[in-house]
Amino acid sequence: MGQLTRRIAWIALVAAVCVLYFCIDPLRVSWLPRCPLRMATGWLCPGCGSQRLLHALLHGDFAAAWHANPFLLLALPGILFLGWLELSRRRHPVLYMRVYSTPFIIAAGVALVAWGIGRNIMGI
Image (tube, helix red, strand yellow):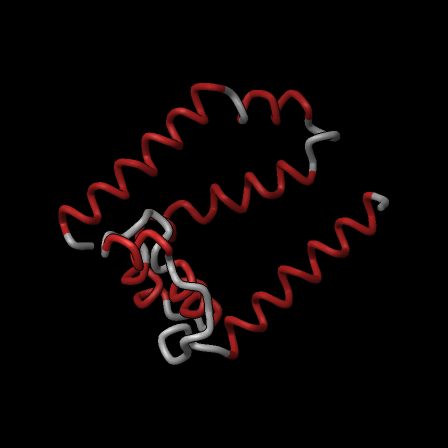
């Protein structure tokens, strides 16, 4: 599969997911995936609320998006940048190597774990 074909496939997948979450409210249907950690333990994982966040953002409701998962909402610009960087890694190899460094990966992991623990302690 060529690079152009892969990009088109990714764009089509992202567009399809956006259309799905624009049209379907995750709070009103039971067939969308549920968090396995939450189902097994009752604890919120760092990504819990991401479906509600996406639905809210697609409808321009930033308050509901914040309520669904404030950490993910704040991290979204960085996540989009990382996605762009992944697609551009051959054009920007030095930037790619600097961003995907061990300190960055450790910091991101610590932030995710801290958010996961903090949101369960504080009930966010």
